[in-house]
Image 1: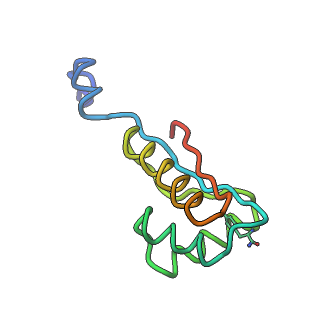
Image 2 (image 1 turned 90 degrees about the horizontal axis):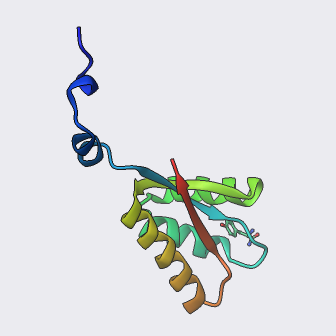
Length: 99
Ligand code: TYC
């Protein structure tokens, strides 16, 4: 039996499978744990428990996955983190890379 993808044109592949991007938060020594949890709940739509677990993982491991999104959504979230961090006097950073 033919696989589904065998009959898809490259345009269909682009439209149906847009590239996905991982967005990671980076640890630093100055951003408060409460602020990171707030960012995870507001920007990345996590509940408190998941936000707290991700924050602790970033704190211990240096970085942590916050979500996987199409390019423009990922880019917007990276910018929101940078803007909110700067407005609140924290150096918190997010980065994205192709999933
Ligand atoms: N390391 C920070 C502290 O001890 C907390 C922190 C966690 C900062 C995650 C950034 O992405 C981060 N206050």
